[in-house]
Amino acid sequence: EIFEDNGYSSQRFDRPDWQKLELFIKKNKQVKYIVVMKYDRFSRNLSQALSMLENIEKKFNIRVISVMEPIPIHPESPFFFQIRTQQLLGAQMEWMIIRDRTRFGITQANKQGRFINKPPLGYLRGKDATGKSILVVDATKAALVKEAYTRYM
Image (tube, rainbow, N blue to C red; front, side, top):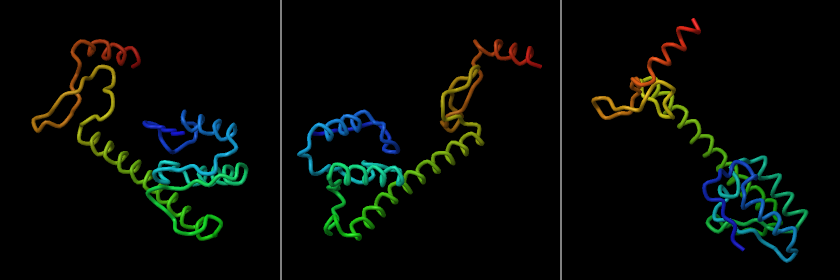
């Protein structure tokens, strides 16, 4: 069987096809391997990944292996555990770096007067002279926003 969670974060295991995979494992005792493309597709949360691996591998006697990151050591070896854990740690670290860079980029854009997310009420997306996204006052809703602030004050 093939289970794909396209569009879902590998940060958690509440992904729809992961749930289907767990049911499949419970019903089909002949499953011996879960083959993932890369360990970062399995999980980008080290603690949850190690817990899930222990559960799957001990409870169901199933090995989780990666196609693109093969480990040429017997899965019972402690070195297999170490290498796979390092790969999972790298996946979480990469996720944390991406998150950090995204936050930084959004903060920098906001400081420059640009707005990355959905514009707040009373504003529309616009472009400055250089073509960068900025907020411009929505003339149709400006009066409502001014009225709300006046009443609040």
